[in-house]
Length: 83
Image (cartoon, rainbow, N blue to C red; front, side, top):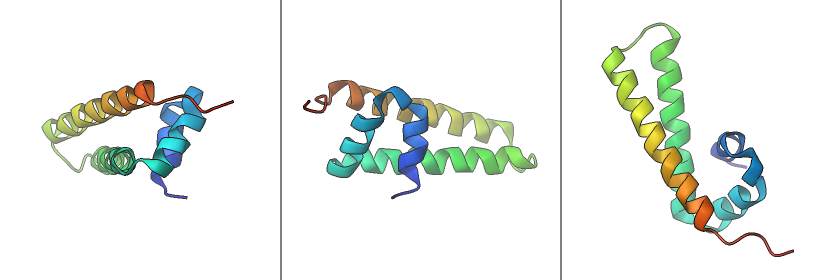
């Protein structure tokens, strides 16, 4: 399992199955998940010991918001799992 899948499932727990299905079948969705994971890791590094300027942290936070919005859009548009 990719390390980015649990990160995205944690952000959208109510859509766990849909996240997993899209991650498995949609390469673009998978890339967005990986980008979000890398972005969150960068924020954590920058904030951990005040290693970066606040402006850089703000840019990464804004990027995370855009990635979240795009992931949410794709999740909403995805077909629910057949029952």
